[in-house]
Image (cartoon, rainbow, N blue to C red):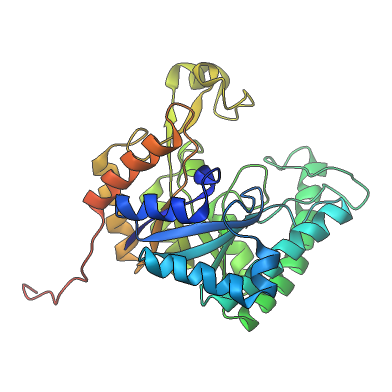
Length: 319
């Protein structure tokens, strides 16, 4: 199991400098943004797809620092009711799949997207309750839209030998494990999870139970923590629209690994991932408003290096 980093917080540094810094920390893998919300700070997707020299330069820099790419990341909304926005997100996803195929990288991380609540609506609609009945109708419509789109995209990914790792995220159609499994059932096994526990903690989902439920549907993992602040949660719940930077007023905030849940918890997470045969990267995503990017990443890397397994288990001779 590798310790990795999503390099977006280091986007103000040249790519080679970021790679050198991460290699010095002992990082094994990088997840590279190539579109959507992650941006293209370290890779230009269009240039890499069209220019063999640019691809060769990236490979040389990775090899020089003994790094591998765990995934290319493009998080956006390909189901957006605005056709231009949806088309741009779809273009990003398909080109990310092309890029992953060019580099023999098996995974693209992404969002499911979120449709409107009906064919004439203009904005996405996150449905979280089945009543009044029009909300159930809207949810059924959204699933029809998602099934058509993701069925086609999953076939495209399969043709290229690439997995689609969907981050279960609020304000997206897929925000929890049962929805992820439903979309996988409606499409193919290229569709799976970018298992990011940070959005599951505040929903009250037990992380190790979710890992067991998803099993081999986990294509990639984000190492990202969350701290719930009970005093705020007791009065306004966890569906909190307070801005992320108003940390003292929020009922939960993202934290660096180990600052929301302790090291014993992360040992359980790593052990449960091994139980379901996940042996990929734990890609640290830093979005902690209480630490700098460098300090948050460094503390997360340090903790994960203590808890990951580097060797495969031997035979159970005691059995």
